[in-house]
Every structure is written in C-alpha cells, then in structure tokens.
Length: 177
Image (cartoon, rainbow, N blue to C red; front, side, top):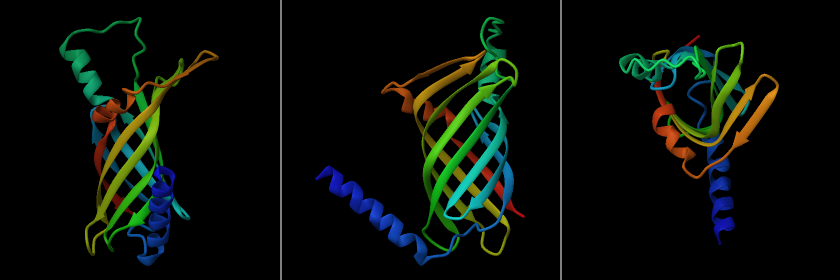
C-alpha cells in the first residue's frame, strides 16, 4: 500500500507539471541569507530540471564563534561554503513554483578539503508579477554527511541528520536576466 501511494503521488506530480508553464524559464542570479549559507546564487534551468549553485559565507557559525571567543586552530574553520541544488519544478500558478530535489551544503577553505551535508530539498519560488524579481525559500533535510580531505573520505548517515535543516535552510531573492 505504501509503495502504491508513493507511485500515485509521483504520477500526479509528473502529470500536473506540463499544465502550467514554468514561472522562471531563464537564468537568474541573486542572494541568499541563512545561518550556515549567506551569499550569492545562480539559478539555471536545464530542461525539466533546475540547478542552483552558490558560494557563501557561514555567517551564523562565524558570529557564534566570534561572540564566544572560541577560535580553535585545530578545528577546520570553513572560510567559504558552497551550495548546490538540483530540483524538479512543479508550477502551482503563473508566478509560483514548488521545487523538489536534492541539495548539498559543503564547507571548504579551498585547500585542505570539504565537509558537508547532502539530502532532500523543497524550494518555493514566487516571482513578482510583471517584474524580474523573485523570492525563494529553500528547506533542506540532510540525510548524509560527507568529508573529503587530503585523499581521505568519510561518509555517514544518522536519523538525526535532518535536524541540520533547521540551520541550513535559506531565504533569498533572485533577479531574472
């Protein structure tokens, strides 16, 4: 029964998508704000999928670290983080898309390695009517943590990892080019 319900929902989503054209059919650039990812993003439509990539700074993490004066050189301090989402948009109106897909947030200093989280994403995009400006909210639910550094790799999962989504989700603004 559970498998039938999942297949039925997938068929309904796939069947309803072509009914309304996508609100964002061109390249868009913008910014996002979040606890672990604040920076610039680019949203690129690739046929039926949308790809969003960003380079960010962990503003909230850095604020807590500076406020507590807890700067430990032994701990990997991420100077930047990169975000990437691959989503399938479902148009709910002429100006609103709900996107389902996968998302990753990776912390890096561009020298010693990268560590991050990978999981599901739900993204809502609202495009202001007759304008080239859109607002979005990206909700993440990581299911896996990864680390790639100095030729070593580590991947693990935990049932509590989706709670990282409370601090890895972002809001932002996009401008259509």
